Image (spheres, chains in turn cyan, green):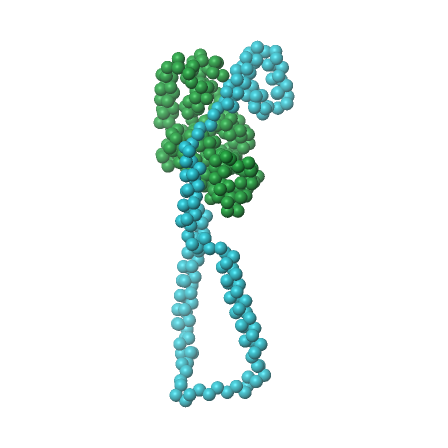
Length: 166
Length: 193
């Protein structure tokens, strides 16, 4: 239920409907109580509008900018590195490796593969890889890989979580 | 001298790496940011800390500012949340009975002032004094509406509440402010306004 004051504040703020505005117009013109209340609230509204803002200290802006500068100075080098530089370096290496591979593959003579003869010294005995790559070694290697993978995944999730909090 | 560029232009320059543009933005809005913080902190030192923290937070998140609303609306919401966090850290519950007592004490101490000295003091002084006696939320709504020139919709975004709730809260806050003025100034309130 609207009180007189609530209705008049809505009228002053311009938040009432067109119908209500017209009704209040008539009431202010004809009803002494409404007119007095309206003038009182209008004066109050004008007084509120003329309130002055508080003044912060003279060094306010300086302090804010100093804090921002200090934060920038503390920024880790990793975050300060331009990502484009990293991308261009990795691009250079990828292109170089690709070119080397293409050159190596194109220089291979597939037709003469059967004629290749390698002369190894008689006293040289190459290790038999099959002896080392047995089942327990492979399983151990895979287990190590899985543990390492989990560690890296955990570290990545932690970094992601920290950056979200910041 | 303050920049003639708009808030958005200053933000764009800041994002392009021009920190001086952000300094201009701070200069432009520091008075209101500080005044809003004063509504919660009640003392200048804490209010400065809240306002400065808010500007630093705004700088950090400037890239995330979506230009759908005014920069001030976004900034004031940061001031509001920073002030609330600050109050929570200081273990001040704004709704507690203790707080009510503080405001009652403030009220009593101000009413014991020599009313005759009213002639020598400005309207703004008495209004600000009455505002400091309000609960922080009431004071913030009055400040945002009258001094920040924020619409009900903008205030609802700043405080994170419905516009209809803001309307009701604003009405009640104005009523309470009027009562405080009447209480502090007795019959002189009519002369004041």
